[in-house]
Length: 152
Image (cartoon, rainbow, N blue to C red; front, side, top):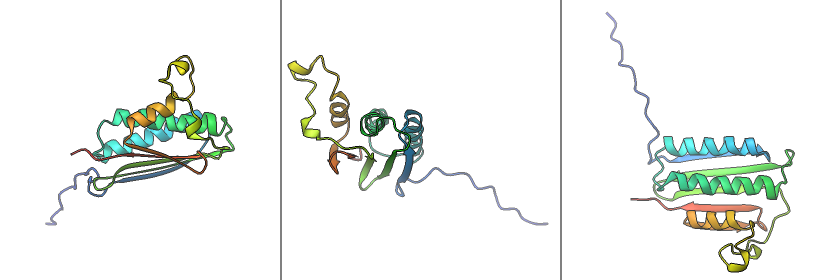
């Protein structure tokens, strides 16, 4: 009689190993939405210890929408690059890069100032800054780096 090995149970990725995901996508809203869903599923499956994933989802959705609409002007020939890494030691890091002309983040009006309350510009960046622990812009605004620290 042949002894059979017990079936191996599928294990979720260990949070100690972390999650890493890269995407290269056309500057289209539906491609950005698919990439967003991929990232959120990977973070959920990997038990990323970075707090409220709904807040991360909102910040990433804004960053991707800005890259698609403002950076790339909905041009499917332009590419959006997305990098996401989460591990318990370094927390969550997300980078979104577009091929647009760039912009000066310091010149974006503060939407909380009385003179800007009726304007729509700047609200997405304002929200990203409130939802993430660290936000930096690189390469003349074509690249946004967002960080979220691990929660105990």
